[in-house]
Structure formats: structure tokens, C-alpha cells
Length: 117
Image 1 (tube, rainbow, N blue to C red):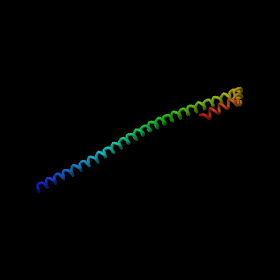
Image 2 (cartoon, helix red, strand yellow):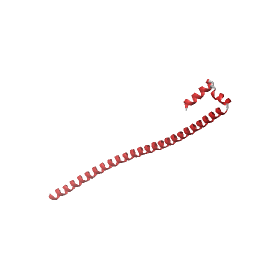
Image 3 (tube, helix red, strand yellow):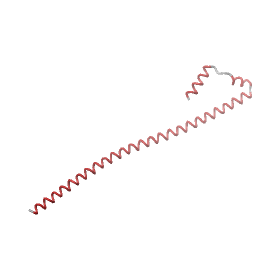
Image 4 (cartoon, rainbow, N blue to C red):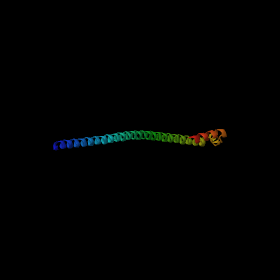
């Protein structure tokens, strides 16, 4: 009888150990699934951040290009203004032309173009 009780106790201990191991495996499996989901979310976030960094770099490059273009336009405009002033000083005919008011239609087109930029 003691022997049967010992065997029953061993079986009971083995059953408890097996159930405990199964629960531990289930918890570990659930944790692994959560970890996998978190890693996928992190990968998605990382890809988004990389895409935004790339867009920011492209935007910065475009901003620099536009500033350089504006600087070139300003330099050209300044050079033309200097050239026109010099021409006005050197020639009365050019000076008279330079002081002439533009027709309203032409002035309107020029104002519209300046506002659009």
C-alpha cells in the first residue's frame, strides 16, 4: 500500500511538473509572440523614420538649391541695374527711356510675375 501511495505521489508530482512546464511554455510562447509583434512595430517605425530622414535631406538639398538660385538671380538683377544706371549716365537718350513710365498692361504683367514668385 505504501508502495502504491509512493507511486501515486510520483505520478502526481510528475503530472504537476508536466502541467507547470506546459504553462511555462505557453507563457514563453505568448511572450515570444509579443516580442515578435513589438519587433515588427519597431521595424515599421524605423522604416518610417528613415523615409522621413530621406525626405528631410531632399528638402534641405532643394532649399539650398533654391537659395543659390535666388542669390544668382539677385546678382544678375544687381548687375543689370548697375549696367542700366551706367547707360543712363552715359547717354541722354537711354536716360530718357529709363525714366519713361511703362504702359499699364506691361506693368500689370510684371507685377503679376513678381507676385507669383
